[in-house]
Length: 343
Image (cartoon, rainbow, N blue to C red; front, side, top):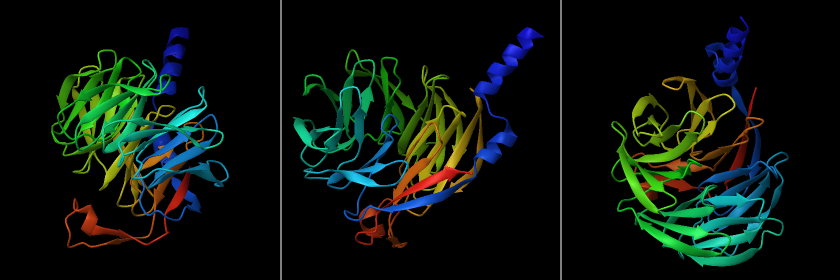
C-alpha cells in the first residue's frame, strides 16, 4: 500500500487529469500595455529572477515589468530588426541580435546600455543559450549559418554551416541543441562540444517548422508547423510520437513543465494547448483566445501568466499566406503587450 501511494503521488505530480486540464485551459486578457512604434516584433523572453519581459521590437528591445506592466526602458542603438533576447542574470548581462548588421549586441541588465557588439553572420533570426557549453548559438535563418559566441570572451568562436534555412531552436541542456530546419521540414541536432550538426530528423506531415519547445524531463520536442500541426518527437532518437492540430500562423511554442503542457501562439488570435497525458500520449485542449496577430509568446512558469504581443493589423486576403509583405499591414504605433492570466 505504501509503495502504491508513492507511485500514485509521482504520477499525480507529472500528469494532469483531463478534468484538471480542462479547468486550467481557461485564460483571459488582464492587461494590454501600449508599446507604440516600431510596428514589427519577434520573440519575447521572460526572466524569472527579475520578473521582466524582454520584447524584440524592431530596432530595440523593449523591457516591461512582468507584474505591473510598467515600461522600464529600451535597449536601443540597434540598426536592424532584432529577433530574440537571452538574459544571463549571473553575469548581469543580456544579449540580442542585430540581424541587419550581423552582430550580437551585449547589454547591461541594470542600465540597459549597450556594452559591446560581436560580429556574427548577417540575417540572425534568433539566439539560443546552452547552459552546458555556456555559449550563445546565433541562428541566421536564411543562410543556414549558426554562429557560436562565447559570452565570457565576448567573441565568436565558431560557425556551423547547416546548409538550409532555419528557424527557432532550444537547448536540451544535455550537450545537444535542436533547431527547426524550415527548408527541409526537419529538426537539426547540434553537438555543442564538437560544434557541428550530428543529426537531421525528418518530420513527416510537418510543413515549415517554426516554433520549438522541449520537455527536459521526458525528452520530448514540440515543433509548430505552418500547416497547422504541432509535431511531437523523441529528443533522443528523433522518433515522431504524435501530431496534433493547432491554429494558423504559429511562430512560438512554450512548455509548462509544472503541468505538462505545450502552448502554441498563433497569428489567428488563438493559443493552442496540447496536454501531455503520458510520454507517448498527448491531447489537444480547447484553445485560449488572445488577439489576431499574436504569433509569439513567453510564459511565467510559476504563475502560468502568458505574455504575447500584437497590434492593429489589416489583412489583404487576396495575397498568399506566406506573402507577409503584401498580406499584412500594421497600424502605425499600435503594438501592444498582452497579459493573459489563468482563471
